[in-house]
Length: 279
Image 1 (cartoon, rainbow, N blue to C red):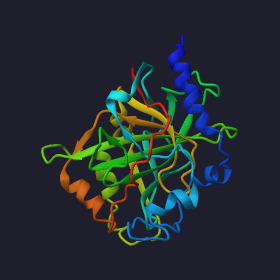
Image 2 (tube, helix red, strand yellow):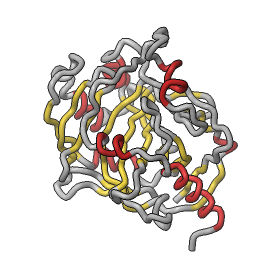
Image 3 (cartoon, rainbow, N blue to C red):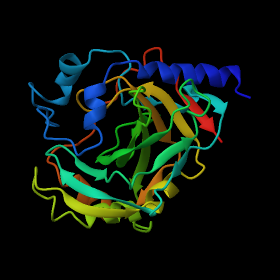
Image 4 (cartoon, helix red, strand yellow):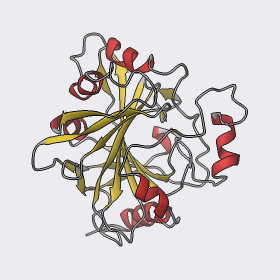
């Protein structure tokens, strides 16, 4: 039975889905085109300091600083990513000029079929739209940024529910750690996407390289927004509490692709509640 606390949490997250975002939803299933914005902190026209005023002056923006002591603990089901039947997330990887984005083929998507959304009003399931990276991480935990954040972006399958569920995976560099299979797969095509706006390159990633990073970990859940323009406030964030490790050279290779850090500064939490969900 869903507790009153869980119901409150679900209503809070569901409320972030009310924004009309059909054009964005249609675009999310393919690799994003180059955007008229940049990561250059000195860019006074399209840099990160201009985004809030230009795109979405709302009060539920992401990323945020997750303060462990402020997170409201709730018991809930594990966040479960189900791999495609083939066991492989195949698609293409491309350099949009601002991000490296892996876009899956239609029949090669992971799905969120359990976790926070079970029992919510739409009882939604979510399918993979894309995977991309930020260096350093975008979400801070107690004021500290990890070295890398992977965003596994899922979109609601119900065409009447224009909503995204983004799984955030945090990584720190540790040369004693084994290579990350997910990062290895992405880096295997690095020569092909070295140049911005190059043609997408076919790529397949073992689905286990993604799903095992989620496991049965506790996760932070809160309503927020996309972290790049158009900053739409229709995202349910699911940030995995366990911080993963990868060799420094893997993270460094991803960091060197772009001339600037690719993380948006943390935004005010305002009156939002951040939950820590423990399976």
